[in-house]
Amino acid sequence: MPKVFVTRQIPEPGLDLLRQFAEVKVWPEELPPPRETLLREVKDCDALVSLLTDRIDGELLDQASKLKVVANYAVGYDNMDISAATQRGVLLTNTPGVLTDTTADLAFTLILAAGRRIVEANRYVMAGKWKTWGPTLLLGQDIHGATLGLVGLGRIGSAVARRAQGFNMKVLYYSVPRNEEMEKELGVEYVSFDELLSQSDFISIHVPLTPDTRHLFNAEAFSKMKPTAVLVNTARGPIVDEAALYNALKSGQIAAAGLDVMDPEPPKADNPLLKLDNVTIVPHIASASIATRTRMATMAAENVVAALKGQIPPNILNKEAWDKRRK
Ligand code: GLV
Ligand code: GLV
Image (cartoon, rainbow, N blue to C red):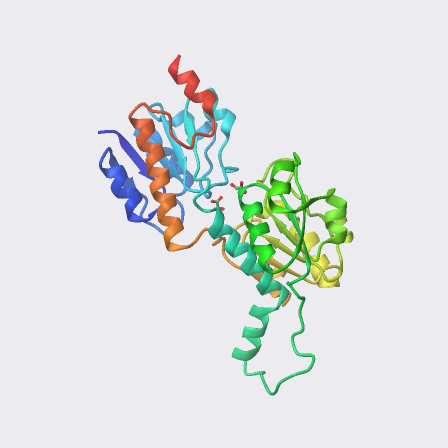
């Protein structure tokens, strides 16, 4: 039987599927396997199910002479070195599509929560500070009728645009490349990055982490935003320069932020963002619904099973590696 290593306990339906085709070993702990453990475990594996906390690079792949496929249990795959895998003929896959709406739900939750100061308000009540109805107590930003700027109009960005329609928001977007078909379908307006920064009341990030998007939100970007603006990030932490974000939030250059992702994760205990009232932080849970995490597990398993059967995995990221294996 082929061997599969799964780097964390994922929902059972995915593991059950894998067990029909392979001997499955699951890393049982809450924290990711240490690097040395991972390097050791892959040595005799035919397949690996990885998480975004596992770095999949040339060093790891060189340990694993039998490895056919690495199935990432995530849609984002900045933790994987695609060209290193392609060079070595190892197939890489992700879990696109199944988490789109769940992630868009969470992005919208953060838009609402950060805009209306929900977490801060809850802390206020829990701390026993609620004395009376206050005419100017905890005033926030209106979501309905506001201008939402989306950075990225892929699957998730588009799903956020659809939600914004229900709140009668004006939706702007910036993306490379421009997507005119989607623009028409959703009734959203393409603008430059600078226009998006200066015109949006809410900005939500939906691009992958790449060298081009790293620190896209830096001090210069914050200086162009409205003092009432709210920034939401459910994509990847390093797209935002956190020191610059802290300065912008602290000085009132922008009003608030809602973060599902940080750099690094978890944040260090002395990260000053953790001390601010105008930032709402959740621990990278955008795709974390029971149904979606279960579908992601099944999808990752299906990708592994296809590769083990010598078939092309449905969600292959490096088709070149497949072509190379065929030769
Ligand atoms: C989570 O961040 C994912 O990329 O699926
Ligand atoms: C993510 O997969 C996206 O396309 O937004």
